[in-house]
View (cartoon, rainbow, N blue to C red):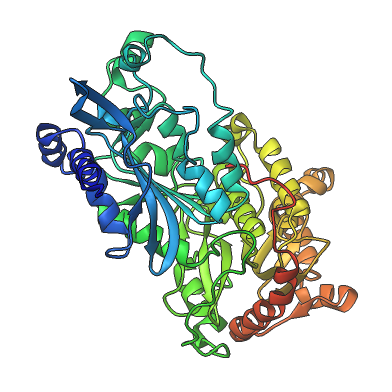
Length: 519
């Protein structure tokens, strides 16, 4: 006796599922210049590797006991491979009720594991392709009632993933409500310029609540969230660009906190010594230099992947490789605010520290730190509390950390380039100078009365500064503390050696992070 009839019904249901929200809605989606959820999955994963699960979840209509119609849930989810590595992927299907969760039968008795639960149990990276409007009042009719907001069954998995597996989010449409929060509820996020926005409530909600007319791009587009709010890390020019960024970001990370990060190609001499480093740091501290040229001179060629390039621009953060080993890399950017650490820059530095600590990557700092940014605007933003948080992250971290002091290292912000415990190494270039603050401004404050009482205050101030500068040589510090001063051209070789030495320490730290990752 054959079960062909039931298999035929299964195939029919699968065909109905692949229709998504119907031809009209798919066409409307394409007219907006966007791929559908299924097209997106096919575009990001390795060809033929996608294995979908929970395929039959949705709303069915029966006539005389036979299936008459079927509307799938507003989510395409399954397992696949990205550059050979297995991941769990979930893509919001905007063609089905705007990607709303209505009809997903969440919490049904005997429900199969969700995508997030599978990522946790399988210890696999999780990739979200977000294109969903969040909750809708239409869902009340589907349920036949309203509901109490309750996130303990779902939100806790999203938070648990941050402690266990790499999580990446791509914003690929107008995303509101809970899906909007899922964008920054990740280790890396990207949004496509022109077609992507995030907000708790869109323009109609803003109009009803505040009486303000605003379009969705001005309210929550890429310019807002990758440059001003910092809620999303990177902008992308297209959906394919967003997918490529996720693939590249993931290549630096292990599949979970229980594994070591994969080592990449070893095609760049670890002893390469760039002559340009000898003259990179200007003697005139008022002259800036190219931090991108600095980074490329020391990392494996072409390996630097910048994170949040448009936000907190006085600090540069990202992932890179040294002799094939992945690392977190941060530096000051003298082109922006002289490289001083502001609230935004400190925020993204803390996220990089958390990423390295969670997934067992060494942290490399190329330091030219003039201190925390000063002024009324910083006081309004709470620079002191931001500094306290940064100091706390430094002291609580435990990943191997190497700092190269190239130029300035002043005050509490300079202090946050050093850790007193664990595997920590610091080298300094001959161009380095340090202290509690800059001599120029510090002399005016510390010797104010002596300067003011002098017949020639300007001459007196200059005399004091000259006297202090005479003892500011890093070699004097090295005589007392043992600080190692290096030829700048030795930088790459010494970092490669440090990263190699760090591998046994990193292996001993495998497992869940000792402090929670907080987005």
